[in-house]
Length: 135
Image 1 (cartoon, rainbow, N blue to C red):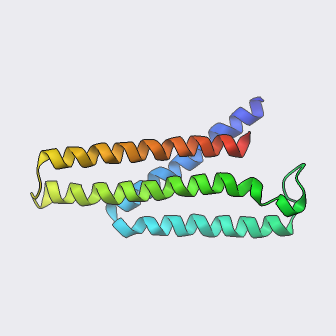
Image 2 (image 1 turned 90 degrees about the vertical axis):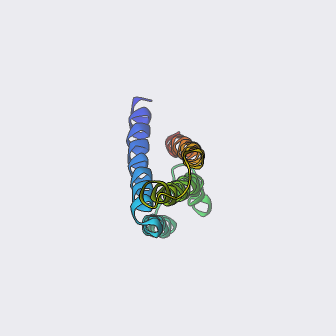
């Protein structure tokens, strides 16, 4: 169980880094978050193709082997998409409010609340995906 808990925290920490990078890239280069998503999806695709050709998950028939990883992979990818949306949304409003002086504080605070909710949902998904992956 100690090993599973250690693996859980290592996996969650790694996924939170990817989440943060996706958010930051989307914030600074709005469409740049797509790069992180495509890169992550390509790694998942290579992993799944190797998995289909290789031994697979323990105690699972070879035909069902990829499903062990698809469930948590989908949760992680949804979290990264949420990070990209939150980063782009915040970037747009940040630019309008601070640089172009368009908009008011009420709109900015509403967007800040929306971004906070999106990031919270994304982080929760990362923890759920880590739990699904380890346990």
